[in-house]
Image (tube, rainbow, N blue to C red; front, side):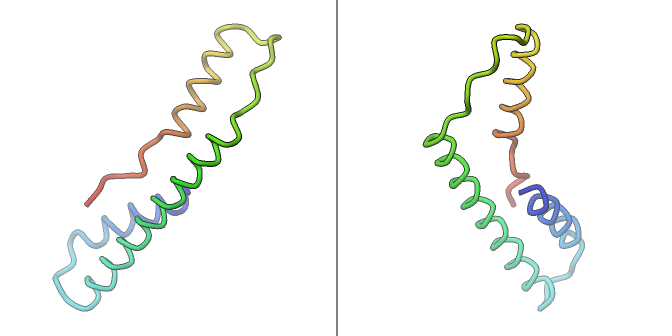
Length: 85
């Protein structure tokens, strides 16, 4: 997913200054296709997470560590895939 997101950003920045033409059309289609692939993979990840919830955190770690673990997991799982065009 990370490689897909970085590729999308790179394509978006590169396409921004392109004049309309065959190269731009090809890259726009690639950008849209990769965006749909990212959306599909995100859907699979959400369904997987609903079917297989994570195990509970160990009781040995402090409340602050548990909060940090939940926050980090939430940020990684729910991070946006990038700006829509």
